[in-house]
Length: 98
Length: 178
Image (cartoon, rainbow over all chains, first blue to last red; front, side):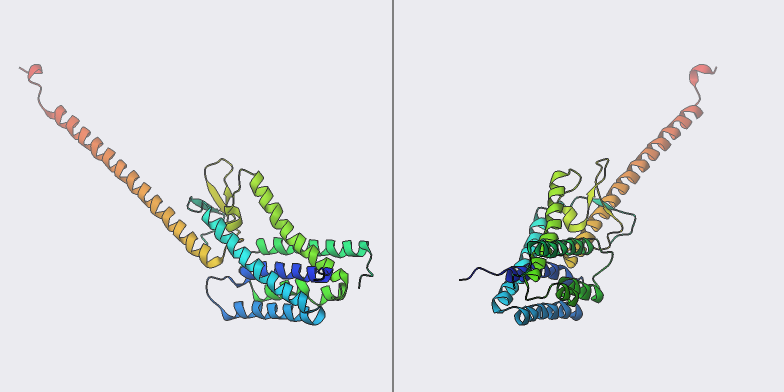
């Protein structure tokens, strides 16, 4: 198996960043179609562009990177919440409650 | 494909790192909920036409840009983790909701201009924040009730003592009379 080219690594890097952002962009207090549709379309567009501009291998790598990144982000948040001291009282300075 | 020199590659990677660093910063400190325009902006920044014009996708420059973007984005996150670990005023909660220690050590606070939690999933944090706030208000109410009860007890005792004093003053003293 050939070593990945710099383009494949670069597109995987971009996809990894996109997957990380995807978690925050889609998480809202109320479920909304637009909030899910746009990132989903953007993800498809990103993978499609990788397929057209690069190759299948880069596309697969990017898809895996996006998924792994999103899962890692959710897992990290879950772990932080478990070890969090959020039960301690706090003040919100200079603004009302959120 | 690999006709770019190392200076060009380094430049593309550094440009990507700068963009990645800034994307993390903007996303972390944004002042409101995510808008539709935010999504399109992020998509354009990450892999839009401008970037592809600068670094055509078939060239190694695009790859270097992607690697730089990754390094800059997660470099910000890594430096945040290092700073939190080395400081006594911040802990992992800073990543979730932005709280930090009050400098006199009396507790924690969240700056009021943090409209949304920086990292946590919003439905979870909204639920938890309201739970924490409700718990805080219940505790405050309990303390206020205790205070009021203590004050009432003191007042009752003072009134009782005063009544006793008054009645003892009104009672005639047999020794001092006839």
